[in-house]
Image 1 (tube, rainbow, N blue to C red):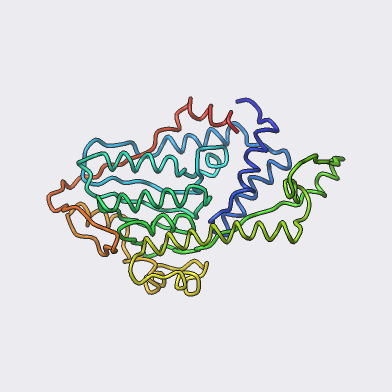
Image 2 (cartoon, rainbow, N blue to C red):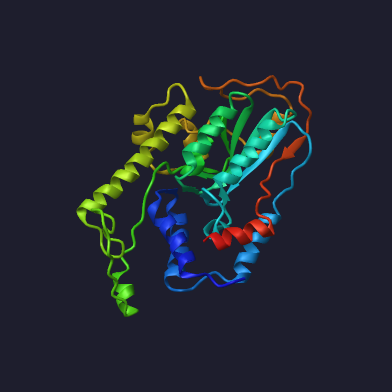
Length: 326
């Protein structure tokens, strides 16, 4: 595989720094580590990329027919497939949307189960996919099963489902948004680089490499606040009657909670394992909760079989093109 170009690095770096993230703090360190390795010139090896892609190809294959579609949401969620999502072992909103469309088009599928084990991801694409899930639940039952982490953007997606269930040992929440800015002036100085930008338009090059000015920090905070407000609004709509923005902001805050506490706070509707949930939905049981925005189809006659919908876009040709895109 060809070595990464400076342009490739700039593409990944600009994406990570220009878009707000809805991630847990530990995963922030991993994302920052990936970016830091690029800054230090330590690019991902062919072996690392190959291993990540093998893991993608080992995901379950689609099974024709069946009453239940299982969509797996694991790892960091990015808008589209790129080197960052490949190395972190995550998924993309683009791929998840494709899987949801397949499940919705399949008349045999009565229930869609989102199997979630994710620390969250980029806010770019989160609202759009959450609204797709909310639209889907007006036609079919959508169950969000947190097994074992449903945080930040992943919880934002889960909140759009008909109901949310969490495994007994699951962690739920971390409803918050952040951005990052790297002051790399010292790093550039060590490399003997003194960079000058020629630009037009006030604020175009504010603190690209150096420390943030108060004005630049204020604008960045406004972007973060906007993304957070949108996330909170989506959660309130998804959870339905009885949920308010004040409750999400002031009671839930941005903490992670064990399943029992998440249930008490109204973040989830029940505690169950993925096996429990699949057994229930294939047995024709009705959902624990249906919000004001939800309607479900009659699934009492569904077959006790499970279909898995997996995005197969990560074939060799698509991966090669995506990496070149970076």
